[in-house]
Image (tube, rainbow, N blue to C red; front, side, top):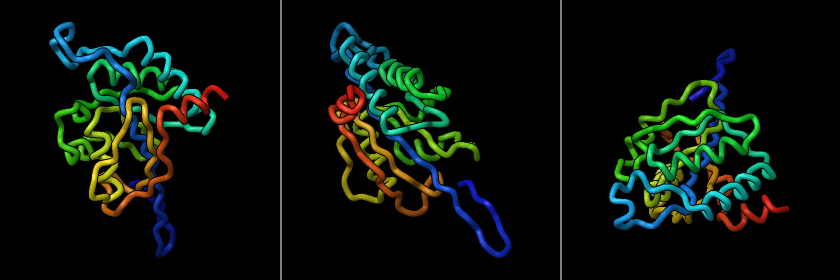
Length: 179
């Protein structure tokens, strides 16, 4: 949590978290025995570029992108970074792998005081479970491939429920990007 101290008071600065499910990837199967190596499809790449255009229309700026080290998530993170201005760094965080626990994800984020806007690129069901944890919801929030939500929190890990600022399907973001 970042804070400014004034005489007898404390001002808390919020952090915007953008939770992003990776774009469309190759199907599981014999061609990809190692799931962590599955890449995005050409369609997934093209659609994610349009989604990033939608983020630009919304005025989204991020300080850093934390990505699962799985190839499809890292490719998605790189596409997002390429399309944003200024271009944020991409950092692989093993705790964003699909098999990891949500509490471990939150505890492992290398957040710096200067980070006010952070993108997390990962997988389902982890992204939906993470959104639920941040919002103190009872059920996971389903994420389609390329879906993005923005949740505002006052600390990481949060001690109080975050605020859902927006949730957008990939279709909505592509339409924004095409406008």
